[in-house]
Image (cartoon, rainbow, N blue to C red):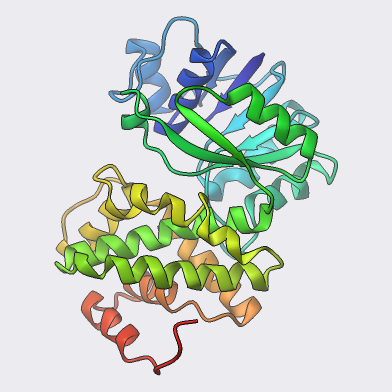
Length: 315
């Protein structure tokens, strides 16, 4: 099968490497001006992934692939779809990314159908795993979900291997919301690490999952999805791993260390505030992260505000 991966960052480059490993004809797309693409053209590596000669490199989307795997910044997805509607329209688009649109709180799969039409085949590929571990042969479990049952089964069959065990998702709303919100909890975990309060991560995991479960239910999803691989099952890779981009970002916010780029959760927490306003579901952990990142609240004061909330039953 011919696979085009859109987005030549660390996860996109891994997807191209992985598809090639499974025997697919893989090509990696990136803008000609992208530093990542320039590095691959010159050395075939970005320091994390080394692409074999069998993986093609392109800066032109032709639409000849049977399937499109998309791994770009969530806030640029709508613009990508508009710019390349001819190449993407009608072909399965698999969103290998996590996030929500700022200003609308829109799920990424809904952005695809907004731009390419309700009949557009779309799926999500989410769950735990770091490039650094996969390329060392460390396996993990992930989820593929879609409202199109035939597409979902085809994708699981096409991309299952010894490195990734896939599960069939049954709740697109819950899986997308849970996967996006996971990054915000990752930033919160980093804040705790920066404050030297890592022992609170157990409480963060418990209450963070409960918070997200309530939001999923309010949006029409199954709250049990928050306890699956899209969210709770991704916590080890996000809250504890030294490779976690969001955790490290949160830690640097507290310590004042420079960090090269914004984490995905930085944008997602703004979208979660949109959803809090739309649904009326309280998101205290997400709001505390928002206050630290956007209102420059003192991290310790934001934590204290969570402890001063009114007492209530756990469930």
